[in-house]
Length: 311
Length: 294
Image (tube, rainbow over all chains, first blue to last red; front, side):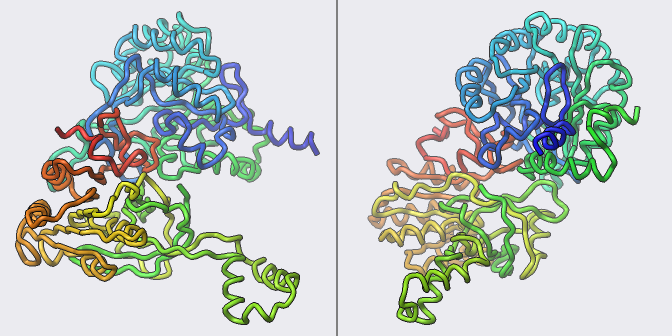
């Protein structure tokens, strides 16, 4: 019986940059805070892991409100990297997290200069619970940083190099789909030693309030996410998985166990779930529970066997 | 917070484009006036956050069956504790233990596709709802002469708040403001439960012509004194009430476009004296002393 259960668990587990995950489901940065809100609802240790709220060197309030707008099958956000800054993340958030989450966590890091990315990673590097760095060079909602680094292969390479210098932990570069050739950016990161690539961040978008004739978001533009972007994400994951040898983490509009499997077939080793956490707070747990049955239906023995099946 | 399925008991237009919906089910997560619920609507990706207007809870399970059995047969029929036990337990076997069930009432205005879809739902239909969201009003601070101020659809939480205050033996004064008499809601309900209700309308079609602040000023000039104010309404109204209530402490409920409604996305943040706060999780009610409006 015990052996059977062990095999059952093995069916879902994957290895991401040398660290074993019980299952491929990762809650995406910016939709999961530091885990506390969800820990009130279910045991977040059921997750593969989660990527915590994007952290910068200094505290940031982010953009003025409204920061949220609805779209067909999705949403726009222009939060603008609100976070308490790396010092308070280390002093307050991580000790609290340790009490509720007992797995390696993914540290999402943002910045406005190459030096800032390196500085934040250097500070977080000493934290034992951090398993991976996810370097956000793809935030569309800040000016003078974020996505600016992810749309130019030279700058993407520069940030990768700077971060790799300050940490031995795996570095996963998070890419934006708002580029002509996403595979080129991924290759530039890989060439500088990136241990993995995660994609996609949100798509640059906007909406207009018909009554006021003004943009709905105070920031004018925002990042689009939710099920509407899923096919775009699958395409990007597929293109990048074809172009690089390092593991790929797929995200963008994932809403079901079927979507998780589609992402893995497109070339993802692990799959992040973002916007859906906001409207269906139990979605990550439910998907993890549904995976074995979905795999049975599709004749999949182990998820690891189907990574990149469509390539 | 709880994710629950609530069954619609009634859903009817009570003023211009304002609907009153009563739903039944597990409402146990709703504990404080000023909290809200977040409803999944057909065709929408984001849920719709709507203030709780009123809650009526009933205890079910073993306790309810005990109560019903005692009412129907009298306790004397069951002359041994074992017999009582077996009858109640047998009946209770089919239902959950002491779940708090009841009804929740919301008032909402049809402004977009989501609320219009909600208006189209009828009795018996089931809605997927996140309940018990946000930090509501702190009635421990009410004192002996609380002033409740509601503007338009923002009047909704005042009914549950007033009921709790009256339960505590305090009779609140309520000032409601509307554009016109055709927008007027809740003044009858609040009057019936024993509140002193004053109405102001912008066009003078009911009550005093003017804004809630004109009405509040008039009451204070008549010599009325208040211990704490509780306000909910559009942002310009909240600012005016804030400005006009010098020397009076109060609590204000805010509205903001939300992503999740439970503190995960940082979509609805606002700056306060105590740093950035999330309207959905740290609010929607904030103390006057926390605000940066000076």
